[in-house]
Length: 240
Image (cartoon, rainbow, N blue to C red):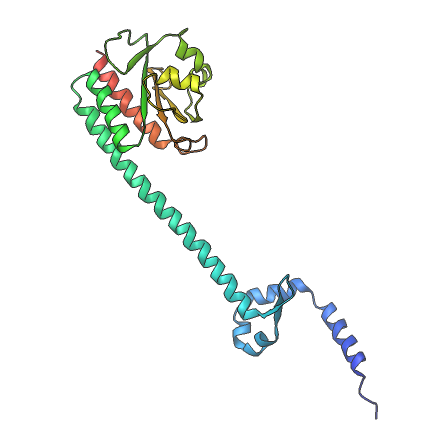
């Protein structure tokens, strides 16, 4: 009768069998049969995962940790989405109020006054500049409304903007801030410059803020575009 193999021989045999099993096949099998370990809970008790620090935890504990971390990430993402939806809802309400104000304005001067008031009260914008192409507007008797000449200071200071007519958001230099908002009592840190009727070039809007984070280069520009469209329509209707 032959003798049973020694412990070392058995271990060697196990290693040979393990090496013969393709790791990818094991993973594929577990993927096709996700309930395998739940049908064999005794296996879970023998499996261990080691942390980088060296301590060992059971597979079930590790799964719980992973699920808890995933849940926290999902809750954080949901919270951000909820906050964004709430903010957008508030902005939509503010745009609606602005639209009513501009529609009811009896004159061009009232359009300017109403725009500045709503932007300050509802949009938290400290300063507003409204410039119109002097081909459409040559007057200088309406406070807050500035004709823009092709070779004027504003056109030269914002040459790239008038060339591309794309919305610009971000930090504003002191020189530009003084040019657009000469009556500002405090230093402005950020601004948004928005075209009025991009294709026809009716003019431009500029919004200034003391908050350096208020306007940022990568921020969404939908509401800025909506405001510009409302202002352009209100101005066009009263230019005569």
